[in-house]
Image (cartoon, rainbow, N blue to C red; front, top):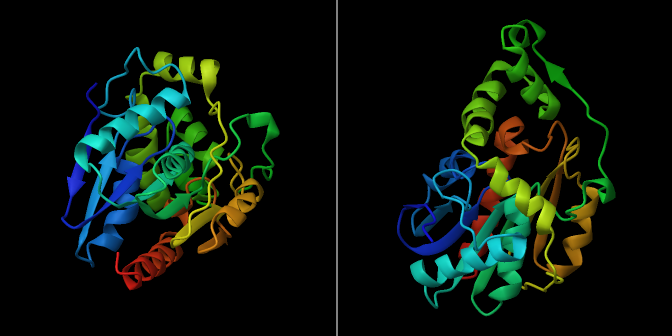
Length: 264
């Protein structure tokens, strides 16, 4: 199985996973501005199978298989090494699976708008809300672009659209939708409990207006992570890293400071 991954920098490995239907670019654009000012971190951005540059594979029928494929990749690229893991949305769900499966080597965790409950109808989410919108700009978009953007964006301006377009809208068009639809039907949720304690610096960032995964369900994770900072960002939807980049960067900086103070 060939899983595309992009490695930037040298040092302590940090494994980074994107969200459903996306590719590594969404997290690369979110995190590289923070890492550009730091040394000593090897960022491993992964395209999940069937998404981005990673081809689908018949052995992957559900999320259990997806997790297993990523664990095999990690055993190849950072065998027996300690590492940090970061996941956005569905990538956060896989990241927690990695924490449970590699408890002896994971030394930190970052969850961004994490998916915690696979079943959409069982999630507690706020109603869709728009807090800031440039209607004259939105009117210049095609109906499809406007529908996609406005269905998720809490802050709807030109800057947010350009990042949404490049990091979410266009990458999602490259996804093998037959493959991922099969996963959703056969086992979007793990068949086992992924709850596991992690006693290392953790950061959970959620959006107050996130109408995809919400913030309340993620709060339930806090007891698993005794070293966790939990943040709920106002004017932040499911793409909170795009809508509140300054606060996002500050929180990630603080998390990395905590990790470095632990001699990671």
